[in-house]
Every structure is written in C-alpha cells, then in structure tokens.
Image 1 (tube, helix red, strand yellow):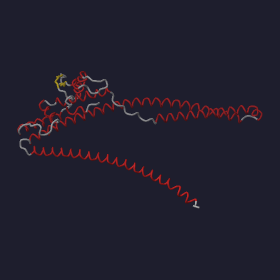
Image 2 (cartoon, rainbow, N blue to C red; image 1 turned 180 degrees about the horizontal axis):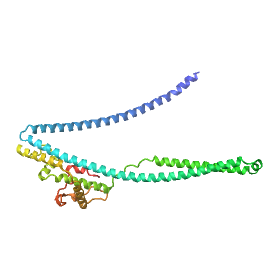
Image 3 (cartoon, rainbow, N blue to C red; image 1 turned 180 degrees about the vertical axis):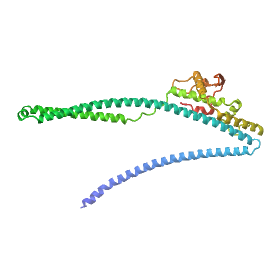
Image 4 (tube, rainbow, N blue to C red; image 1 turned 135 degrees about the vertical axis):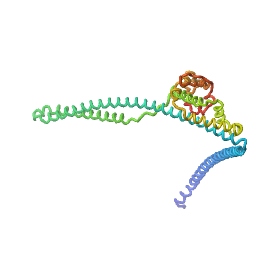
Length: 343
C-alpha cells in the first residue's frame, strides 16, 4: 500500500504545475509591457536625435552661409551693420521687458501690501476680541475660585449639629461650584486655543492682478514702447531695426562700405541718445492715458486691447503739446511687445 506522504505528493503535483504556469504567463505579460515601453522610448529618442541632427545641420548651414558673406568684400560690411541693427533691436526689447517686469512687480507688491494690511487689521481685531473674552473669562474663573474657597472654609467651620443638618446641602453646593469651575477652566482653555489659532494663522496667498490692473499695466507698456519708437528721429532707421529682427543675415544689403559706415554712425548716435533719455515718467503716464481713451477690447475679460485701436503714437513735448502719428506697434510686434503684455 502506498504511503500517505507519497499519495499527497502525487496529488499536489498538478497544482504546483498550474501555479508555475500562471506565474510564467504573468511574467511573460509583464515582459511584453516592458518591451513595449522600451520600444516607445526608443522611438522617442530616435525622433529627438533626428530633430537634433536637423537643428545641427541648419546651424552648420547658417554658419557656412555667414562665413561666405564675411569673406565676400561686397557683403562683409553689410553683415556688420545687420548685427548692429539686430543688437539695437534686442536692446530695445530688453528695455521694454525690464520696464514691464518692474511695473508688474510694483503693482503686484502694491496689491499684496494692501491685502496684507487688511488681513493684519482683521487679525488684530480678532485677536483683541478673543483677548477681551479671555480676560473676562479669567475674571469669572477667579470669582468662582474665591467662592469655592469661601464655601470650603464655611463647611469646615460648621459645628457637629450644624454639619449634620446642613452637611448634605453644603456638599452639593461644593460639587456644584467644582463643576462650574471645571467648565470655566475648559472655556478658558478653548479661548486660549482660539487666541493661538489667530496668532499662528498663515498669511493669505498673494492675489493675482485684476483685469483693470492688467489693462493699466499694458497701457503703460505700450506707452513705453512708443517712447522707444519715438526716440528714433530717423524713421528709416527704426524700420531697418525692425526688419533686422524679422529677416536673416544676407537677406538685406545696406550698400557699399561708405553707406554701411554712415549707417553704423547713425546706430551709435542713436544708442547714445537712447541711453541718455530720462525724466519721461510724467510723459509716459499722460501717453498711457491717451492710449487708454482710444483702446477697445474684444471681450470684457481681455487685458490686451485690439491692436488697431492703439496704433496711434502720441508724441508729447515739454510744453505738453501732443502730436499724433500712425504706427501699429502691437500689431507689428515691435520690441517683442506681444510676449511682454500682461494677459
């Protein structure tokens, strides 16, 4: 007769095989998932490599093109002028960007300060109210403690007969005082926790700028963009600066060496003049007011006006006389203004 161990061993073998088979299929499924993920990642990396190779090839092509222009006597001076014009455009863009950032930060800080001032005033009022309640509660607690102490002394001073006749009532009064005292202490603890909660309250999150505030900022940004534009007394020069930001080197020819030298002199003179400009804050504010008077928005929650409604440039002289001219700085994206305006 076969042993019990042998019988049980034979009976368990099919279950073990099934378990191993299930594990095998599970592992196979996991491996397939991992393989698919690796294939997907491989494809992504291959695409990135192709994109990088394409970008590198374009850069090499541009460098070779630039080298060809620099060794060409007819183009070398034009290349210098082109990059000087582009540098001037970037200088204007940098000035506008810095102005916008400072203005936004100033307005955000002003609103934040107003918010914190209001919040602190409310917190101070809450703290004062809780402290007043706590002071009154502590006074009630002190009175209850005095009453309880007086009652204990009265009970202790009772004579035998008086204690026998009035002892139960006195004990009840003591118990009542003790309960009232415990409740008063609990109330004091709750008030102390409320006070701690008020004192430890976190500052509110900084508020975002409202649509009217963003519009006000944008009017000032457009006003400053017009200020930069108006500093170009030579309208031909500002057009060349704008053109250099839109075209590639070699797409424009500025003439022979003499023409290029004269253009370089105009660029240097303009940079010096632009850097000396000052005391124009009041003019900017007045110009922003004039821009706001004509600005139209497509939607009520738009912060950026329609470009055509702010295409009038306002020049304001020292006597406050306003002269108008047409230049769609927003529509033509002068100084990269569309990426600077608050949205």
